[in-house]
Amino acid sequence: SAEDKQKEKELRQREAALAKEKETLRLEHERLRLLSQVNRIMLRSRNSIVNTTCYLQEQNKAREEEKQMRAALQHQYQDQLDTLKVAFEGAQDQYYPRSNDRCIQMSLNCFIL
Image (cartoon, rainbow, N blue to C red; front, side, top):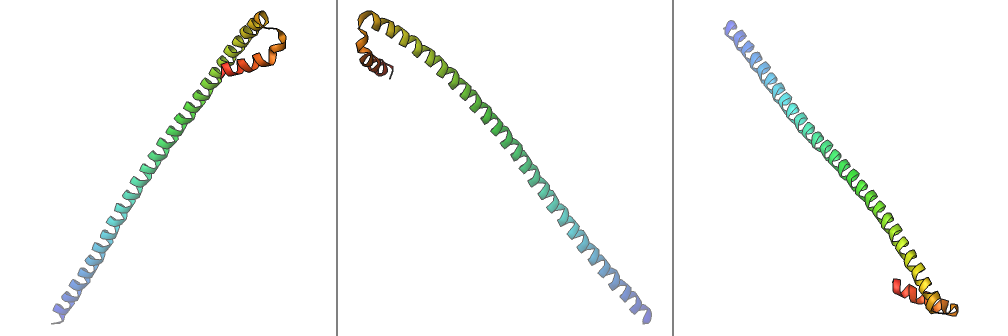
């Protein structure tokens, strides 16, 4: 009958609307899942960048401290070398004539090395 056909047509339309809504919900769920993945990746990247930045800052600080220590040691070494040179020259004046300056300087250089 015409009434049955009308009901069947309405039922098919509702089924189609439900199928369309189901697909829309599925797509929205997939979109949210992908957004969640992107957010996790971005958070990991941000944390990685922060960690790398902290690591590089620590490395730069350590390099600067090492540079300062080397400069201090170089200065200390130079002071000790100057003191040794003065003492050696004093001993040289006492025991050797001035004509042996070149020989004494070479001996001092060998002693230092």
